[in-house]
Structures are given as structure tokens and as C-alpha cells.
Amino acid sequence: MKVQKFRGKTSLEALAKVKEQLGEDAVILSTRRVKEGNRLLYEITAAVDLDPPVSEPRPKESSGFSVVLKEIEEIKELLRGLNAQLKPRSPLFQQLLEQGIPATVLRLFGNNGDLDKEKFLDQLSRRVSRRIGPRELPRLMFFVGPAGVGKTTSLVKLAARLSYAGKEVAIISLDSVRVGAKEQISRFARFLEFPLGFARDEEVEDLVAKYGSCDHVLVDTPALGPSFPVARLAAILKPLEGVGVNLVMRAGEAPLLAQALWERLRALPLSSLILTHSEGLLYGGPLFWIFTPGLPPVSFLSTGDRVPEDFERATAKRLLSLLLRNLDLEGTHV
Image (cartoon, rainbow, N blue to C red):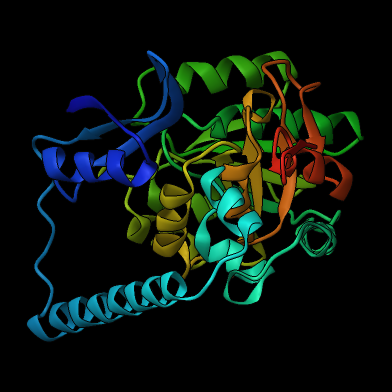
């Protein structure tokens, strides 16, 4: 596997460099804002499998049809962007855009870029209240997401919370890809005294049935990518009933990458978002990707490394404070 870092003035510029150097099969491992001299840049760490597995060829008709649909969606998005650029924007709209809030999200708050502070804050408050996940949790929960976002740690934190609340919890791990994954989750399971099972794809349904007496069964998965594609995850989920799929993402993820991942996962039964590394979020602007239409609500926030202390239920007040963190509204820091 080849791993490289790319920097750009914007997330789009950095991502373009990834695609140019590593191709369309590149997997995003992490994103962050870094200082280079007096400049604040976007840095993306990406990897590509130099010897990717050979997939079975699809029928021409299906492949061609998928390509056409993808191109149509790209053209539609381009036209929407051009349309927005031709219409006048308020100073606040432009200011928020420069602070990392995606244009596609900002347009939800103001028609044609017409936005003022009072209207923005009022809409934001109302929209945040609708982005909080339900308190009742499904019995069977999968934890999915890209590499390095904290899926396993989030799973263990939630398992510990449920156990302290008097619930019986079992853990299943499908992660045989990442180095040290088995040892990591085994260590947590022994310490917290949880039953733990390792399963291949075809064994998941039987292992879930084995833990039928438990109140909750939590399933850890490998990082989404060439070794664990979305199609494989969908096949595992298909025979299971009443499953909830938690998408685990960094709070400060680059909006473009978060939205691109959502497009790949749209067909899956995603039930909630778990936002990690929220304690390191410097600016609230990039977090506005959570308002991308269709995304599930936010259920939990991971705020540090302690298990299970640094894991909390998402609330409208807490989420609003993250979104407004160091956000400059008409020259005023909120």
C-alpha cells in the first residue's frame, strides 16, 4: 500500500492532488488543517492499494448505465454551483463560505445567498434540534466509517455506557484487516468483561443469534475501502433484521470528503452519526456538512480518549455550540 500526504489552499485543491497522483481508487485516511508559514492549509493523507483485488466484470449495460447516471449527477451539481455563482450573495453568506461552510449547505439557510445574522441563527437553532438522534437504541448496531476515525473506540465507549446502565452487551468483530485490531478489541472486552466473537462475513448472522439473550449486540467493522467495499458491507447487512448502522466520522472532517462518503453509503440503512475528535475541532464551519440532505441524525459525540467518560449523548445545545465554535458572524466571534 502506498501512503502520501497532499496539501492545498482548499479541501478541493488537496483532493484534486490526491486524485491526480493516486487515482480514483485512493482511500482517504485522514484530513486536517495545518499551518505552513503564515498560511492555513488543508492536508489529506491518502493511500492506494498497489495490488488491488480483481473484481468480477459487470455486464456492459449495467456498467454503462451507472456511468451515465454518475455523469448526469455531476452535471446537475455543476449547474447548481454555476447557478449559485450567478446570483448575488449577501456579505454574511460570503463570509460563512470562506469559513468552511459548504455552499450547498448554506443555500439551505438562505435563498440565492440572501442571508442575515438573525435569520441564519434562527434557522440554525431550528435545524439543529432536528438533527438529534432518538434516545432509544436498536438491539443490533454496526459501526462503520473510514480508517482512523475511532470506530472501535466509539463502540467500546458505548458498550461500557450500556453496561453501566444495567444492559447485557456482546461485541462482534469483523476487522481482520487492520494490524492490531484483534488485540485492541480483545483487551477492551477482557477489561470490561464483555463476550466477544470474531466472525467472517457468512458467520455474522449465526453469531448474532448466539448472543440472542443480550440486550445489545455491537458489531465492529473494518475501515471502508478497497479491502472492505460498501458492496461487501451491504451483503452482510442484507439478511439481518432490525439493524442500526452508525456512521462514525470526525467532527472536523473535510465537508467534500464527508459528502462523497455519504453518496457511497446512501443505499445502506444508516441510523445515526457518531462524531469523534470533537474536542479538537478548532472551527465550527466545516462541521456544517452534517446538514447534508439525507444524512442520519447525530446520536453521540466522542470528546477524548477516556473510556467511557469521553462519550456523550448529542444534544441540541452541545451540537449548536460546536457549530458556532469560533464562527465569525459579521466580525463577531460567537
